[in-house]
Image 1: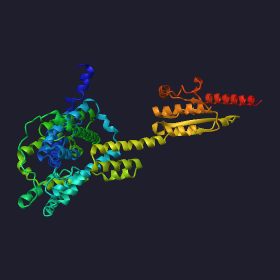
Image 2: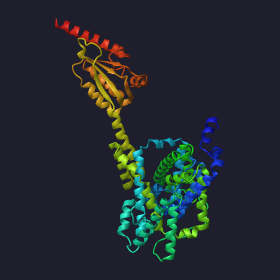
Image 3: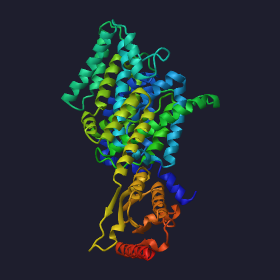
Image 4: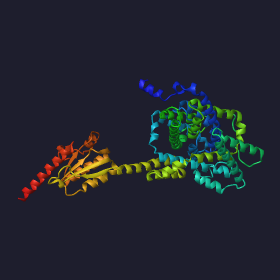
Length: 557
């Protein structure tokens, strides 16, 4: 293998350098891993149930993906597993294609994410504007909250056969079909869990409020005869890895969902890793390696019967706040969850679904950054519009469509605002005025000349009347695209056809090749009509006007 290719591959693989700080940080890593493992248990169970798969699948994903992403990923502190955003995408896929396809979709999505990392596409997430990201996050929070409504009204997630795959519609359907003798029990259990989480937060941030709340309602349901639906029987170990049946006919319908999941996994994981790198002294992250690690994590999760995985921002933040600084913390978090499966699968199976709904509802509420939303809404109208549109499309249609529309929406406004910076200014000729100067127009073009502003610049320059020479000043021109260069060519040709001589001054070297390729410079009447100084251009214009006036005087005689 060539040396360059070998270095390229090594940069995407684990190395001893990943653990060089372990001697200094191992105590914090153990505490961070233990803490985030306890926090992750109810979330893994809840996201597994809400996705329409199973609580078991949520646990498997947290364990397998947690270990693989920690070892192969590009962040030292990222904690991966099932997330609310993935549940939002997965539930409609389960409704359309069945639970049995989840493992295959996970593997296909993992391969796509892995390939994106190998192709060094990790930096692409940087093109997503901040208002779009926040609108996307708010929309996900709303959907996660709505997805818990069936657990509070009919005892479980919406049935794929009778409920819509859209969370908003499914929530309305669940309320209309609610068992009102069941609702008080379920809402009461959810409120108890939420109260425990809020109280624990007030007392000490290290208390796992969600686990305490889940424990309280589980004990209460064991003591009191209640109708609340529970998780049910869980296995007391991990299943053996199995590669799902792969046929061309079965795989083709899943390619679209797999691409959606892969895009979401890449976006969420890279955002989480980027946020994590700013929360403390956790070292840099490698976005390309992070995609490779997340791809491997989803493939591994699918082989064990789990769900697609992503980096989890909330759990990663808990890890960092609790002292986690190396990959050991994320591995410990997965081991803690494995211990729950091996030792406590019986008690865990008795947890009421309504209690998990309470955990996820408060989690969704905490995802909403109210101060951030207010600041965006009070900022530029274009940013506020992108934020609102992204949120609405996320809730009503599709997450990936929402991101695409948000980016396009923000891009259109950005281009519009950029084009407004393009100016066309007629300047006075410096120094004492001379006879004939009124027939010379010095026109300065400022800012970027791109497709969005090209037509306006053409119209403003060509509408000038009563002049015989136009000097186009290019020295303050910024970025120029092909449309802008073509507009300049049209300006020169249009003025020359009217008998107006065009002189160009100050073409920057960075623009010269484009101008020659498009034909701006060859459209000039003479190659000597290109100048490097304004004084030279003005002197030539004055001599040209004098010659024109001399010709007119001779013709008059």
